[in-house]
Image (cartoon, rainbow, N blue to C red; front, side, top):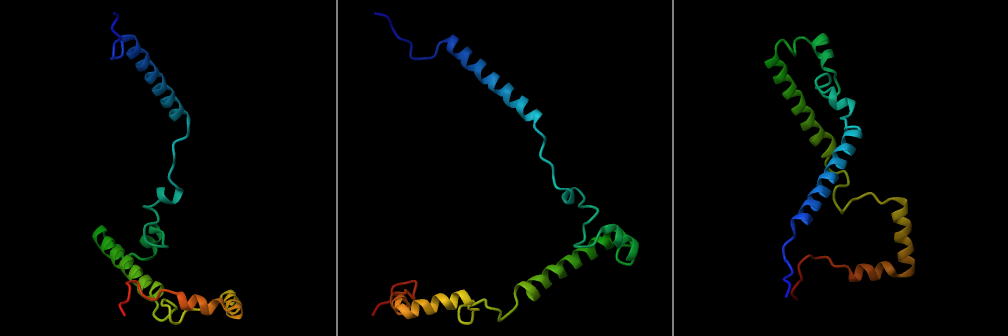
Length: 140
């Protein structure tokens, strides 16, 4: 009886290796032909425009009291950035009593139209009757 080998032969290994090398060569050639991804111009000029909304060369030209040396400039930069972030969060993005809860939110005209439409057909009462108001089951 002839025995069938269960492991790949040398010819099969060489053929597979040559195929992978050819595939690798094709991938490298395709990658070298395509244009490399580039960063946006604003990201490349970060050192020119580092203070928020103010070009750095303007700071050195018009406000020398902020930047007499590198340490003072870094300190002022950190102070200004912290103040702007703090002000944005607490004065703009975290305005109290501005519809950030469910009790007093703004009801748009479309919302009122749909709500009145549901009230006319009786679906609003049915929806509020079957609405789940608690996350955990209530024991009676």
